[in-house]
Structures are given as C-alpha cells and as structure tokens.
Image: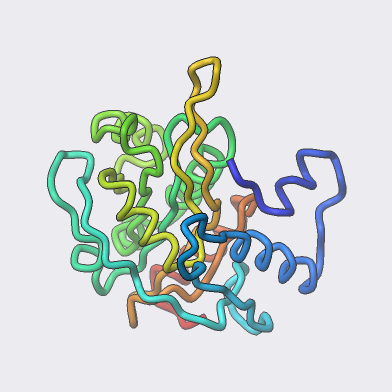
Length: 229
C-alpha cells in the first residue's frame, strides 16, 4: 500500500502533523508522487486551497471532473460512473479488498459516518469503491467485503487499465498488483477519498489517508445537502 505522510507518522509513533502547512505537504506528497513508469504525461496535480470552507476535509483549488469510467458493479451489471452518479453527491475511493489496513479502515470510517446520517441524507450520497485488484476482486468478493461497511456502497471492478487512467486523471497513483512470495497480493495505490458535489459533479473536497471518522461525520451532512466547499 501507499500511505500518506500522516499515516506513516502515525505508524511510526510520531506525533501527527498539524496546521495548514502540514496538510499541504501531505497532500502534495500523496497526490504528486505518482510518476508514470511508461514515460507518458504525469497525473493531474492537486493544489490545496486556503481553508475557508465549511468542510473539514481539504478544499481543492482544482475541481476535477468525474472520471469517464465504465466497469462492472457487484450485481454483475455494467456501471457508468458519470452517468449513474450524475447530480448526486459521491465519495470515490480506489483500493482492494485484501488490503490489510488503509482500505478497510477508510471504508469502515465512512460506513460509520454514513450510519449517523438520517435515512433521507444517506440516499443522497453515493459511496463508490473501485477495485485496484480486479483479477481477485470479483463482483461477489466485492459485495461480501463492502456489506460489512455499507450494504448500499457501490463496488466496481473491471479493466485495470481503465481504472488506472481514471485514477490518474484525479492525481491518484495505481500500480499493477504484485504477488508476494507468500502468495499474498500487494496493490500499490493512492489512498485519497474524493468528494464530488451534486451541483457540478466535480471533486471539491479531498480526504487523506488517516482522516478520522469524526471528520466524515461532520462533512457528510454538508455533502448530502450540496453545500458549496
């Protein structure tokens, strides 16, 4: 896995970075350390905007378009990300089900925060998990894994090249999964969550790896109501 600066510091026992400068540094490292091994153009870069937002997540100065991505959902049906989340608040995360740490923690925290919402507000937010290990993350595997966090969470799997292209357009790095000597699989990927507002279907808020559950609890009601960042 690729961890953000805050996660790495937490894992080593170092006090969490605080202040706008630290957040900006973490955002820059997790989002721009995504060079292309193929020699093509690098991924989109993200610049943190001065925090004058009602959201506790990081406000983005560049509002990314939702990726044009067609994959397969957990019922085995085609799913067009842009078309089927159009006009609805959306949280988007790239990861894999056998991830030992960041993926279940992130999705679990979002799941807890979603359960704290009213039933009406929950219906206004799509939580989309896109697999970075599609060979192993079949629709059935994805559904079983996601159900432990949110039975209404959307799981998508399919062509890894498409997934990598979509993530790259958002400044998120994904590398091909590697089978380790012990048979386990490591899928190296950026661990950012992007929040797309329903007003323009663009990403306005970023959540780094290690974002606390209480931050999602604060922000999700705003996202459900389409409050501007």
